[in-house]
Image (cartoon, rainbow, N blue to C red; front, side, top):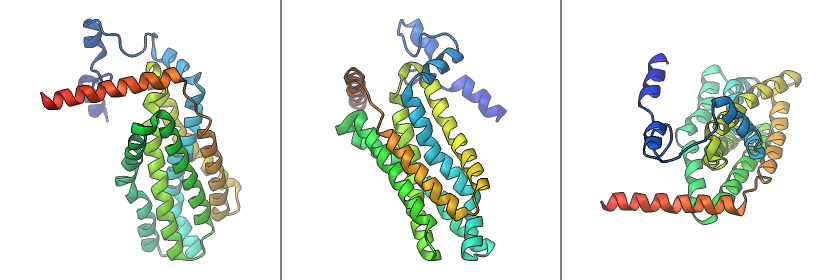
Amino acid sequence: MLIVGALYWKFTQDCPQGNFKELRAQGIQVGSDKKGGMAILMHAARNYRVWILFGAYAACFGIEIFIHNIVAMYYVEHFSFGLKEAGLAAGIFGLLALFARALGGIVSDKVAIKKGLDGRTKVLFGMILMEGLFLILFSQMNTAVLAILVMTVFALFTHMACGATYALVPFIDRDALGGVAGIIGAGGNVGAVAAGFLLKGMLDIQTCLMALGGLVVIAASFVLMIRFSVEHKEKEQRLFEQAVLERNNMAQG
């Protein structure tokens, strides 16, 4: 980790346009003019969209972490699986992350080409809503085969929702992107810990899963409250068109 940290510090760019130091030497203003990480963090914390996405990420990545922790035990206790069978069934949930998270981002990008930022918001809402509904359904399954099938669909939407969340993150506030990404990312850990405490207060895993499914549906409804001003959307559209033009010019050159 120390080696990776040193390599990251030395070789990575500060932003998509390049290194802040080099860009500013050319007279190009990028990033935030606020001084210090705490100022950027506080600026991000004052944006209500950040906290809605904090809850959204708790509802997808937080649930993902929680499910990784308990799903094998659930199959052992509820369906009398052996450890090997429970491990294989639980492995399906994690295996989908190989492509489903990226797929969520790709779907968000495709929809955004025609629908813009509002399209990204609706994609995220739909994915978290379906995650919550299939989690509730998963909690009610009493047949092992059906439980695995429903869990697979639930896992697909959970991972896709994670990708769709971070497909929206860069457009919340470009001047405080680090703070925005950091707060929202922390939501995943908070969600997992909160779900663990909820399980502690419940009689069994099945009841906890159903309650979590309801909370995920509520989190999805909050996503619909995200709004962007006309000016914000026009600015992002201009930047998108400029980026596409630059990419096409590079491809032709």
